[in-house]
Amino acid sequence: MSADPIDHVIDLLKKNAVGQAGFSLEERRAAMDAMAEAFGGPQGVDREKSELAGRPAQVFKPEGSDPEHVLLYFHGGGYVMGSPDSHANLTARLAVTADAKVVSFDYRLAPENPFPAAVEDGVAAYRALLGQGVAPAKLAVGGDSAGGGLTFATLIKARGEGLPMPAAAIGLSPWTDLTGNSATYKSRAAADPMIEPGAIVETAKEYLGTAQASDPLASPLFADLAGLPPTLIQVGDAEVLLDDSREFEKRARAAGVDCNLEVWDRMIHVWQAFFPMLPEGDEAIERIAAYLKLRWRQEATAQAI
Image (cartoon, rainbow, N blue to C red; front, side):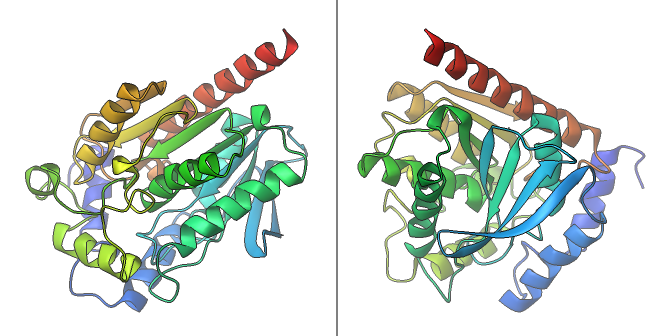
């Protein structure tokens, strides 16, 4: 086995059922939870089970503090699996590093609740935080994989409903195109240990139900992106969803969005979640935290003028 940490992570993932074809949904859900449990419990945070917009949520705050800034977080899992529990280590690390309150939201999953249930829940959660008095200038929205796509879909729908935009949006390997037609579905298939192209196409069908993959709220890549907040996207060079980020960044910039894309060499899908064993995971989280702090500081300065 290679001594390189990323190779060790890849070896582990090749033995896991999360993104592979031939496994039932129940097996994939269990595999995602098992991956999270392998890292133990989240460290350095106060963790509270809560409710937001009628749905379960978990709130992570740096131990002993009550930060004024809030990150609304949507977990990944192809819209069919995952939960605040499966992503607890990642959201806790984000809370500590960004010195923020991270609200990890448990939106409804498909196929029990197909599109647009997740988007409706995302907007309801965002609206609820605003209703609680969280100022948009102190708020950010983010997520990984499907949660990254949900981040953009939520903000697109919220914009259409006249809600103010947050200070920032964050996408970790976001799934922005559910058509499955991007070139990296082929060019990165052998390199990606987590997502098998055939499996993710089937997952998209489970989520979409009777909807079209090109619906802008299912595939934000095809939406009018004008007016979205400043955005940071991180994606690995060794993942099937690479083009989901590259094409989204191009279209966002063309629409006037301040969109920052980081493509990380040799990194895989949502490598940030493997920070306990992967130095690049911790480094990426540090960069996300720095970006959030910068955006919140800039918004505070703008409000003071």
